[in-house]
Length: 310
Image 1: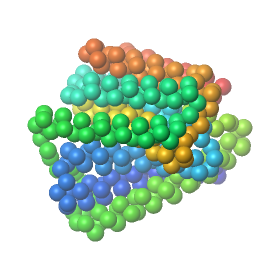
Image 2: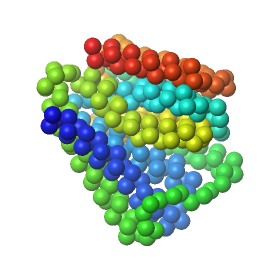
Image 3: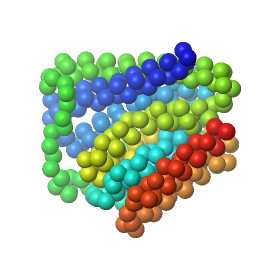
Image 4: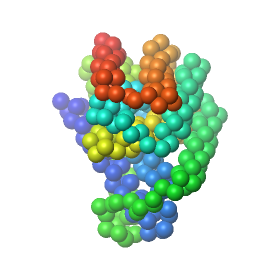
């Protein structure tokens, strides 16, 4: 039971730490008169991906790259099939909003890059650099495109006191919480692996993937319930792009390359390509991702998890 508690505590620290970090960054950016739109495209996007980044880097330090790769592949599958499927059931696809086709294309490109890297068996240092450059280019284009649409630039909300001291404390404490949470999580995961004789890829595709998808699930469901379809869909698509190009790109540079186990090419990478491709195709053709399709996606994800574990 101790290992399970470590995992739960780790996830709590990861998610809450990321929230504290984001709020500190948003408040500090506002004090520095950085445009709110730019804050959303950069600081918030990076901050909400801190749990994935911390876990991936910790997994590489522990010599368990399959947990790192499996966590990203599994998280993206979860985002598309479980998170987006749930949002569709709640009717989030009825008003997808502007820029969804652009984001869908970015998801498709990022996924294809990961497919090719998986078949090759490695994300080299060079590929990692290329992925980061591609991500920065995408963010720059998206930011400029959003500015040209004359979207209202409201100041982002924050529960922090509006001063630089509180923001700096939040940045530091949030970062420390994320780091400590990653340590607790990996310690618990290692115990679970030994206790239940699970391999690294299974852990990455299930426990790590589901846990690091919790922030996206929460944001997407809340947005769907509020009728903010664009936010719900954009959150899922943006998270998947960041996970592949950003997290794995940084990890490849950090580790001097990441070896990808051939087992991922047998099933999981194709599940990711199929699910992402299907959703992107529907968005390209302006077809609604209705409640029936959403229900099918969620059931499909449950079936997929069954085959991963058993």
